[in-house]
Image (tube, rainbow, N blue to C red; front, side):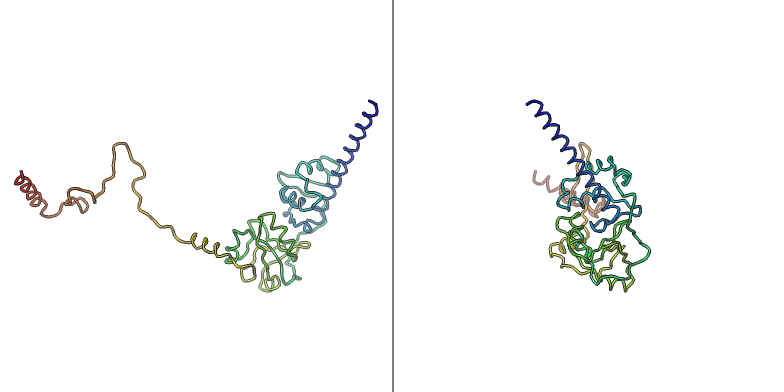
Length: 267
């Protein structure tokens, strides 16, 4: 009986290790496809060296139902397995050594759909509808001909992003640079006249107006006081003749004499 239990436990351990290895190998193949073949299919745009951040990679993996369990530790396991030579990690970035995709940012795309989609954060919506779209420092705007893909990418940055339409062919005709990357398109900036989207909520417009108003300046007194000091209020001065920047008014002596005479007469 004891021997049978040990055999079962041993068989369970072997099967568990085998299942774990199968999952690790499968994840390695997924990473190879995502980073080495079709990053655009997952809404990923590598940098000029082919790297994507771990954060962006894990977010994209989690959008696949069967891979939602994946954490960076699982990717590290792949890196330590037989796929180590196929992947490279530097700081917070990872890339495939062998890359079969090409990112050409020197030749703008000639064939463009009439409409492309992109998303912005809700807080940026009013500014974009006023000033247009512009990529962050060293990055390009990511555009997609499929609205669902644009929304997928936008949800990585905002829980309820605003979907915008870009008049791509009209923008290209006016000299706007748009580059092709697989099923995605990249652009450094899109002028506001080529952007269409939902109207900005009135609340957001009002908040923008309030922020644009200059702050009212108020006179401030001394920022510090030492023990035993107090601030003089000229309006509460018992002697009404001590005014006008310390200068004594004419006839102040005569008025003071009259006041003293009046007091003596009362006494």
